[in-house]
Image 1 (cartoon, helix red, strand yellow):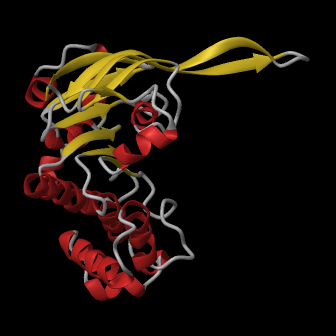
Image 2 (tube, rainbow, N blue to C red; image 1 turned 135 degrees about the vertical axis):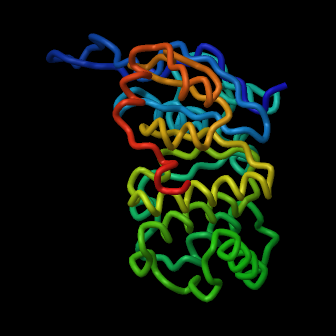
Image 3 (cartoon, rainbow, N blue to C red; image 1 turned 180 degrees about the horizontal axis):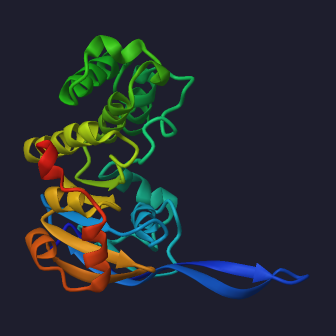
Amino acid sequence: MPLLSVRNLRTWFPVTGGVFRSHIDDIKAVDDVSFDVEEGTTVGLVGESGSGKSTIGKTLLKLIPATSGEVMFEGKDILPMSEDEFRPLRREMQMIFQDPFGSLNPRHTIVQIIGEALEIHFPEMNRSARRDRVAELLKQVGLKPEMMERYPHEFSGGQRQRIGIARALAVKPKFIVCDEPVSALDVSVQAQIVNLLQDLQEELGLTYLFIAHDLAVVEHMSDQVLVMYRGKIVEAASAEAIYENPQHEYTKKLLAAVPDLRRIGV
């Protein structure tokens, strides 16, 4: 059984108009999408801005309500679950966000930001135990434990994304949606974050849905690649097959538009 199985997923946003703001149309951000994610693997989801890929990630974590379909996580359909029913699974399913600055509360120190997740999901942990766990997480992502008393603005973009990764790891998840985690970073820093994510996957047995608009990054990270265009998956194949022998014209255009990360040593 796949860790995650998505069937006929639709996430539509209604369009209203007229004096009475009646329903006149739908924006079909995600339209009849199906795929599986095997445990311990990375599925790359690639497409240009507006293709619906980030909407899929947020729908899987119930941050956006689905219109219809089925999302099975460890054999359980999570879409019909109430928030109370789904709360225990939030520990298992986490997200790394695109903007490493906007996703961190600028008024909180790093120990507060990461410790908040621990406080919510592990209420039995005391303050000392939480600090020890934050120190361990910072070391795990390549930062120094003494940095935990600093604020987000005191870090570089790459360091802030490492903090975002540490926050996602805090509750020991099985599945992480990586929502364009390197697109806001310099190319050389992108390589460092990609390598860190791969090292953590090998060390912790993590499963990723890796969302990006850059096929070169996705090809390097992923076992399986899904190409998304206008709310639909137009091509699905192994990373090697997508890169060496793309079939869909849209996939070929994506490949032609991006640099090869192997040139910078990823």
